Image (cartoon, rainbow, N blue to C red):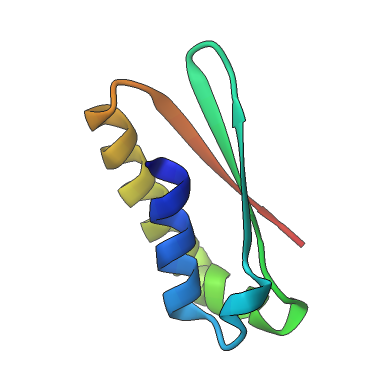
Length: 77
């Protein structure tokens, strides 16, 4: 559920939605969501001063609380 949420948000933001890759690394209590986008779309995903990335992390935190898990978003260059 969390992986699909981040994938949907990222594909909505970028110019090349076909190059969006989202991987989920499951831990015992924590899930790490790894987001990879095209190099030219990296700025759109991060946003000015990291505002967009921070907003995505906030949404992910709220969704993970509802799923009773802890999730961390990693944006990979």
